[in-house]
Image (tube, rainbow, N blue to C red; front, side):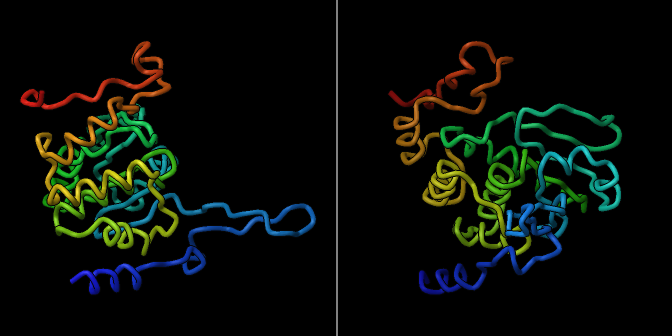
Length: 226
């Protein structure tokens, strides 16, 4: 089984050069390569599921053109459209390795699932569409299909090849896999994670959360855990 999965991981790897419509190559004043500029706001990584950055959220014309009806924001964003225009959910977390993102998987996956069941198009975004949003969508795929995290991420990369969750998020995707693709706050693996990661950096750097926001908030252990 592992060899089959490893083969799938290998065959789904892709390069951004395979998607020239997503970017524009830049050059410096001497004509030397100077990096790339992303020209696409978001990509449909699965049927009706789009991943993008903040620019996708704030571009109403893009949302309307692609018939987006539902938005899941991963970050400290605000509602910028009337409630009647989009179904918009915000999960306020930072892109930090110590952010406890896995605990949001049930809520985020339920929101995505509801969109799919209603045949609605959903935009899942963070600031750049590289770390937080791909992590949440990978968690959704894993829970739905019992798919290993590397395979789920490779599936996303087929259409958005530059996604790259931070190291802490990748570890939590592995944790979700170890938990059997179901988040359980009482699972031994999760309790062990909390012991080794006592601070949740979800709000780090955001003053609206008070003094605790600068250093993170305490990760809570399940009540039954001593």
